[in-house]
Each structure stands twice: as C-alpha cells, then as structure tokens.
Image 1: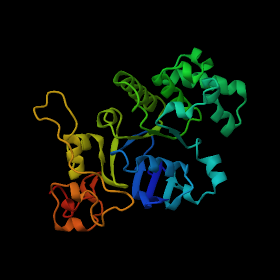
Image 2: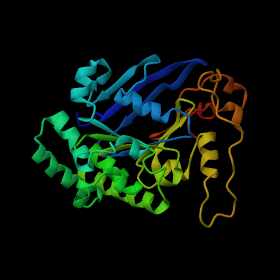
Image 3: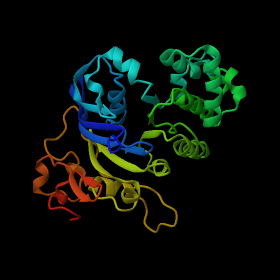
Length: 324
C-alpha cells in the first residue's frame, strides 16, 4: 500500500445531456494524487475543471449522459460503491470540498461555528460539545479567531468566509481536500494569505490538496504537480518546477507566455482563437485550430506521450519520445 497513490483516476468520463447535444465535460481523464501533495488542475474557464471535482465527489446533476471510469482511494474503487456507502465512507470522510463562492456554502442564519462542526456530528456522530471543541481547533488551524465561532456569515469578510469553508472541509480530517477556485473572488493580499495558510496546513497535517484554478500565479505557490486541462482532457502533466519553467505542450507554452512577469522584456501574449465547444469537440487534437505548430497528424486525436521522466504531454510533437 505504500506505493499506492491516495487517489487514482483512470478513464474518467462525465458527459451532460443538454438541448445543444451531449457536453463532454470530463473526457477520459487519468490522474493520480499522492499522500500529502498538492496537485493543481489548471485550465481556462469552461474546460471541465469543476466537473472533474463533481465527478470525484459524485455531486451530479440529473442530466447525466455518461458517467464512468475508475476512481480509487487507497486502491478501493469508489465507482463500485452504492450512493449510501459512498456518502458514509468517502464524501467528507476521505474527500472534502471547498467551493468557489464561500457565501453559497454557508447558511446565512446559522452561526459559522455550528456549520463547521456539523460535518463532524453528521458523519462521525460526535456530540455537540466535542464537535465545538474540534471546530475551535480547526478555526485556529485556518487562522480564524475563536471568537468568530459565534458570528454569522454576513458578519465576516470574504477572506474570513473562505477560511471558514476551509475549516468545514478539514473538520473530519479527510485525506484529500478539493478546492475549486478558492481565492478567485478575493484581493491579492488575501489570496496570498490563504495560500500561505494552505501550505502550512499541508506541512503540518499531511493533507493532500487538489487545487482547481485558472490562475497560474496563485497555483505556483502551492503546486507539487500540475495537470493542465483543455476541452475536457488533460493535455500536460508534470512536476510543478518543470511545468512552470519548461512547459512542453503548445497550449502550455502559450499559456505561460500570457502571464505577466517582473523584469520581463517581452510583453505578455494572448492565445489566439477560442476553445472548442464541449458539445462538438473536433475529431483530432482539440487544440489544433489554435496551435501555431499544427501539422497533418493533428487531424488524429493524440494520446499522452512521455516528454521526460514524470512529464507527459498530449501532443503528436512528442510521438518519438523526448522534446521535438
């Protein structure tokens, strides 16, 4: 079990049935998350990142056209579990979730201390007094004064509300916390403060994180590995230090070139074109129409090729192995 990843995703699909056809939001994704590491799932809005989180937690709408693949925690296939067993053993026990808009996750008429303690009482059967003590400890862990336990959500700033939702995700001591754009609505200083707090929590508790974001700068603060998502697929997967300094996939290279940097002579460049519709993705490489290095073979859908040790890219340029 020591070599078994905490989370292993193999061939995961989540498609939605809509009036415009079937939307292939998550389309054959393979990923792993190891214990105590931070995996960043990076990509543009609409590429399927949030749908990936919903698939892992099985928080699904009714218009599902396809939902299959394998999602294993410590080798146990969670897709084989019934809904009730999944709720008892996985959701908020092994995997918890921090959604993008903190106010949407909080009941405006219930004190935040009670809301943070609720998962512990619901999933573990802990009595009110012990749950309140644990909530106080978790508030300290995420940097919220204990006096805030008695406040209502509207009495807190956006940054404090986000910390409260993080405390709610950590209260049951899950192995993995999925965070969906946790700092996108916050100012830069508050973003930095929360990212520093996440790094401290990861170091102190050994909790693994999956950070879903479109923000390259923020993600670089915590990432151990990066999975770049485009049009429902993972197109590059690499250690963070490799991805941010030597991106391989043409989309990754253009994405990094679009990020402003201090002491940079070149001006940031935009990525031409628009992402394809997930209801009608192209038959070949999904980035081909925007790619400056497109060639004939891009008419076929590429698999993931090995670029370097622990570094893969879904691009025909790497079909012969190594860098083109």
